[in-house]
Image (cartoon, rainbow over all chains, first blue to last red; front, side, top):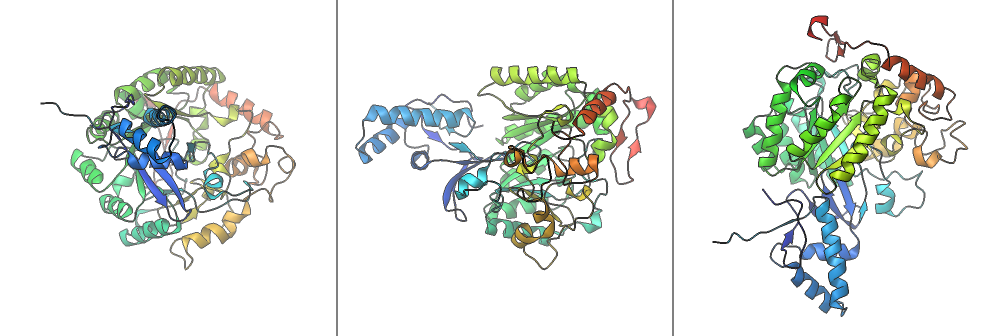
Amino acid sequence: MAPRHIQVAETSRVVLPRHTKLKFDETRQVWVILAPERVLAPDEIAVEVLKLCDGVRSVAGIIDELATKYAAPRDVIATDVVAMLQDLADKGFLTEVRETTS
Amino acid sequence: MTELTETTPQVDANDGLAVLERRGSVAETYGIPLAVLLELTHRCPLQCPYCSNPLELDRAGQELTTAEWKKVLSELAEIGVLQVHFSGGEPTARKDIVELVQHANDVGLYTNLITSAVLLTRERLKELADAGLCHVQISFQGNEPVVADRVGGYKGGHSKKLEVAKWTRELDLPLTVNAVMHRQNLHQLPDIIQMAVDLDADRLEVANVQYYGWALKNRASLMPTYEQLEETDRLVEEARERLKGTLTIDYVVPDYYALRPKKCMGGWGRQFFNISPSGKVLPCHAAESITGLDFMSVRSNNSIAWIWQNSEAFNRYRGTGWMKEPCKSCEFREIDFGGCRCQAFALTGDAANTDPACTLSPLHESIFKQAERDAASGQDRFLYRNFAGGTPENGNDA
């Protein structure tokens, strides 16, 4: 089972779980998140962050990319990104890939 | 992040469409709904006395065929519906349920299964998950078999539900526990909340019975006392705080005791429709209880989008233009849209009247008293829901 109720840290490699889908709604021309009996409307920044949540990049990596792209202070981006992801995680719409250490 | 829909029919809804479509007027917005409830069949092994299906149940022979449901699913996806809820009756009583879920998934719809669970095997559930099912909602009638199996009128049902809930999580599907609450099981609420936590559910719906159709017939056996309601409010409040981040709790109050009416369906024909087993496109699952409305079918020559936008039944109570006083000049008219049309019809004989759940209705006081009388009636026996028009509970089983 995918881990639930995660704490988002910069080392986390987060990913949308199977039952949470980021989708472009062609009819309304907006991005939506589909979750159990719910539809969420992420803002532009959230969409950009979520597209990078591929379970390969770490949260730190995502923050670096966005800080570079927008030439913005890294600590400001970091605070916003972690808070946004934690909010999604608390709702059960975000999970993480965990290493199986041998 | 904006939460757009509470797509469960009985739960109060936000104005998701208005946000998504950036419309100005909330009252006149009726873009294609984000989610649609598909009542695949009225057949069900359970006989719950508060069933939300109409008294006049569709027979198996009237149900849409597999090909017809697939066409409906394709059409829904094409016009902009994002989610479907496969419901019933019991949706898994349809032999083609896996095929329908697969098709919904293929055309890009997000799929929820709303089930009593008693017909499912682990293999069947796995097939559904493999077909793309995204979420399972299981109804529970109590937290232990004595009350639960009696309410559902189905022996062994409760333990089967627990088993299916476990499989659901093992298959990594999100789980919602739906608990319909009434006078005869409200004392179990603390245990039901704990049961939902133990089952590793994501969501719990604490849904007090709403009184239409079968539930209206059983009102005296189901209506909670006012004291029970106050205790329920307290318990839900406490549990929400305690379980934040673990379990989301949606709560529906019994509106006979409310001060303001519920914004039923988010307003008639504004953001919700369902399709009945025989293919009728309905503004809500109880809409057929209002006589004098002609509901069109997907079997007609009109598209679903046309029926939604243009049919007389959808336009009759859409927006605010149909309202009489006290709704017409009420400052809440675009907040609650005058409450529930089916309840207004059932209790006043005119669906265009204010829902008596509203304090501004001349009948408000009398339904509050009616609720208190029902709650104190001492009448505990059920009339079970079935195709035979209902069967009274045997006194020896009670």
